Length: 100
Image (cartoon, rainbow, N blue to C red; front, side, top):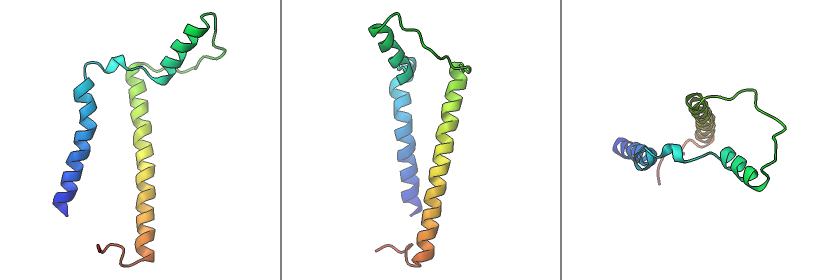
């Protein structure tokens, strides 16, 4: 069982690493959807002026940090929910940990 978990962890790490290896130096080529939407609007209506500007414009490093913080907090909530569901399942079914 421990070997299976180790292999699954290694597979997950490899899946996470593949985009960085393949596109490591070209990562700045990919724009977010906000940037793409703004470019499309400027293309369709060059005279358009936004009616609102965000009071907080993070630099690239801060933006990545905030995105990672958002991802970690989402995964934490998801992990907590899965943990609670598993506990509830085991409490209601004492044989839930047995494999068939």
